[in-house]
Length: 86
Image 1: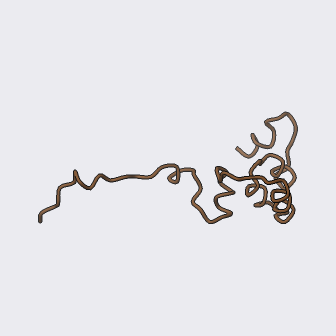
Image 2: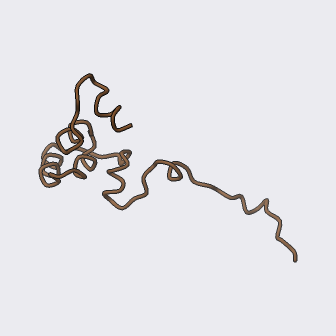
Image 3: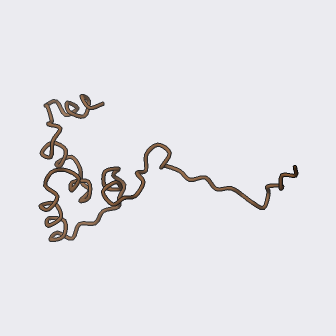
């Protein structure tokens, strides 16, 4: 997966702030790389908004990422459940 990400555009993309920062469009996603202050200032001065769809953006704010078991929630209909008698 990493090799595919690094080479999908025909060149070799570095796995550092330069390669990953240009790929992420989310302000918080960009801030998870090495130069957080620069990305904060750029986002604030340009009025950028973040929908927190990027997993690294969610993790940056302490929210569960919407991947794996974080992609759904379970709802239990309690009015249908019968009490268990022992």
